Image (cartoon, rainbow, N blue to C red; front, side, top):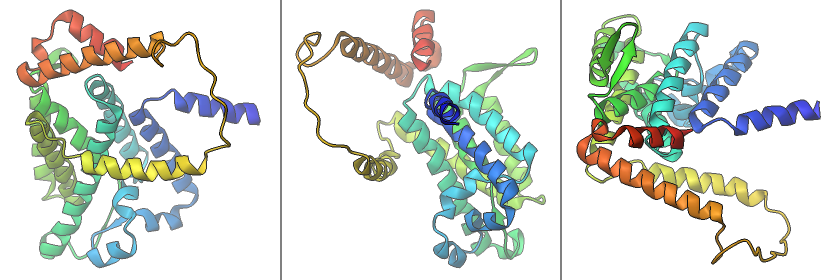
Length: 282
């Protein structure tokens, strides 16, 4: 049993951050099938008064799904978008966009039911990662709108896909899942604003990132063991190994390429630069 557990932990550690979120979503979905009556505590209520009693639901709702098709489509989107996103940006920024998309989508959902109860209905609960996934999608569509994706036998530019998704969500406001589509639009808006501010040199996710770093540091502190004697490594130069120097040089190359993308767009990259980004993303 111990070796099986270690094997699972090893495989999980090899996943990128968004693949780990997919794994957590799947695990929560399975647990939800067994403990369905208790899942209401983690759904996001449309009423602000109920939300105050369950503030964690602004995050946890994004890990719950209605059925197999709901989670399947969201996780497929997240998998493909994640590979594209992490080829260009850091894992921390991916988490910033993802969770802020979920939060903003949830806030817009509650605001809609508060301001327009006659349109959206009196009460509802929100589940699903769609708002967070929309944030990543629209972020990429706005960052490199002319990047083409192969769709069956056609090449589609990213901004075509982004506009189509937003239009469907707007139309969905007049359907049976009005609240869910409002949350989708909230995530899409967050993704668009995030990338537009980023291109101006401002990362609006830095505040959220600091909060998450603080929370994670609490757990790291509790795991610290006794102090250990540090022995000098003769293979180091100035305190750094050859691998450290290689990592530093690779990061500098990535920074230069990302700066080129921000100024001239993804299409301005040479084939060698695109290949380097792809390998670095792996």
